[in-house]
Length: 70
Image (cartoon, rainbow, N blue to C red; front, side, top):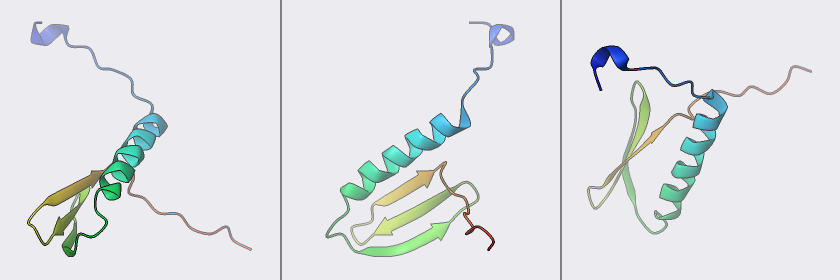
């Protein structure tokens, strides 16, 4: 494929968020019993390191939710 032939794909933000959330849930399900030694909020992701040196990266679902004003 020639670089001029590249077409951008349209991606639904909510679908991407849902997929990233599902992947994060699957990773978290593997972590019971592991001790977290570090957590970093990076520019585009969250990095969690466990005591065995494994680093887990989480993308795409970071955000903020505020309770409705009363």
